[in-house]
Length: 226
Image (tube, rainbow, N blue to C red; front, side):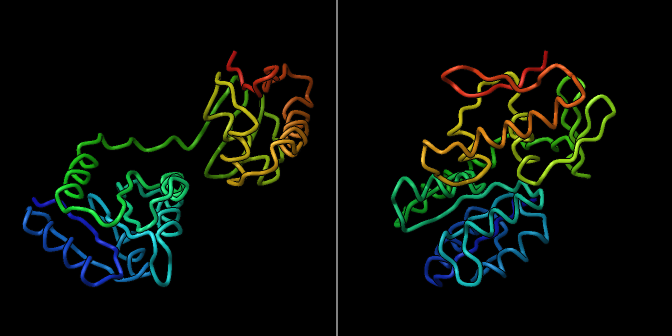
């Protein structure tokens, strides 16, 4: 059975060039000419990989891939862009793309990168519950409890806690939190991280339990699993 590839590209010549080459390599190819059409096809399911242009009418490539990841779709995405700056490539990867290819490109390289993506093992379904000692986080119900005690968190506090729980027993720096939770580069001298973590600690430990989030002097914070 042929592997199915979705090509989302608004430039007709580029789109046809990619589709023709992939079809000749034995892939079943479907195309979309704008971001909204691409999102419709991508969420319809069944694709083994997506070739996605960064700049699209209707819905740009970054927003499209973010929507896919938010919906739980892990289809490998190769993002195409005419912007060669490192920052732009980093934005694409952080948004959820699996690989990046700068225009102009050769079909041979595009094909090789798709083959590499398809060789990667499929990700297992993510757990809907995270735990750390007696703390439990239900990602679907957006609920947190510790030792049976419900903890009410703001959306930002929930994000911060999830970030820590996915990195148990690892040092998390303030810069990592700013970029991973706020998705923004604040002034490095800001105390926004410390303020939020101080409040989060009070919420987690108000029952007199042993602190979960430790300060690592000169490095950041760590959530220890015991």
